[in-house]
Length: 205
Image (cartoon, rainbow, N blue to C red; front, side):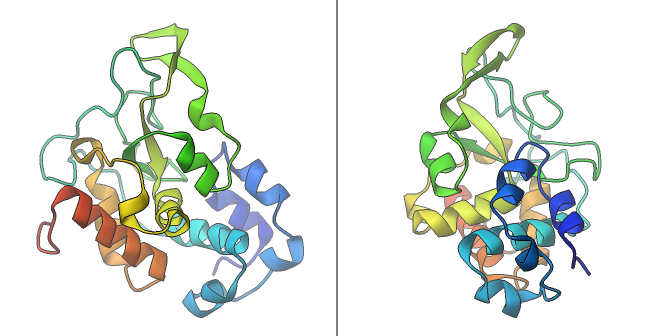
């Protein structure tokens, strides 16, 4: 069971762990009940951290296909910042090495940072695709599965979020959401949203 602060911190993406854990009370992180009933009763920030721990525990390996069943497309494009855990422009990883499971490709806007309670890195310039010596604005970006689920909930539902780039969204995310849809209401909402935005049905995988 993920019951301690160290385990929760380990579950967070490396770039966001310091931001989230600084705002998260130690006594709350030690709550031994990280199951769905306890998660539902937590304050929003605590719930986001617990959800991160839950998704981190999912035994899902990286896929090379997108949610539509084809080859995984590029999330980044020339003239924009290079994304992906592996910084290849694809929302993929090398097995289970990506703690945050950066598998969802979205059109990045400041709305994502604001709704998920992060500093506004969404509008920063980062190394360009094809020219890492220069900085480019962020276009599309590979975001964590847990952050995408939280974003939908905080934004007010699937119709209120930015565009999802389906041909560049990793099948691993869809399979994780399907397998664990009963673990937390936010995961179910993320699954429903992915199916809605990409025209998928439960029998697609």
